[in-house]
Length: 140
Image 1 (cartoon, rainbow, N blue to C red):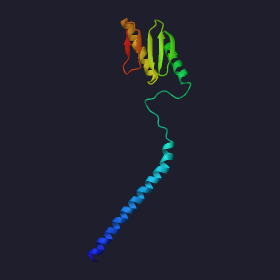
Image 2: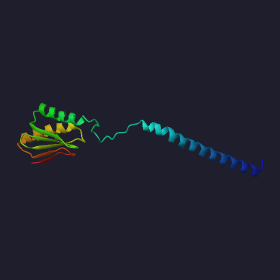
Image 3: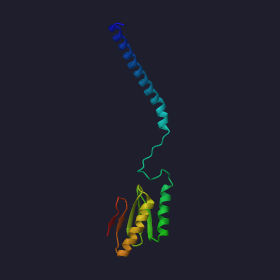
Image 4: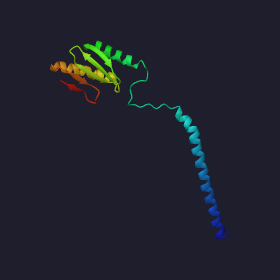
């Protein structure tokens, strides 16, 4: 074969490869668009930061959990109220405890029990005990 025919044949092969690649890529994009949309529609992605359940009875459940915990651990609760993202517990000595609904209630209540026992052993009275932050905040 002549060198001119070899060059021409190589150009045709390269053009066909490039054309085939673009056809494959466009079919892949179209399939992903139509079929991937249905696959992603069935997946429910929830944020791990949000611990509050969407049920309307969840506020009653958390308040009853807090009340039963206080009763079982003999914490003298006078009043328990709930705002949009905070549970406020008022003790018999008018001390206030703030819990966050964005964090795990059970772990906050366990920390509350440990903190109250430590403060009782030390003989300290507090006005506000705030568990909404990473570390509890105590106002004496």
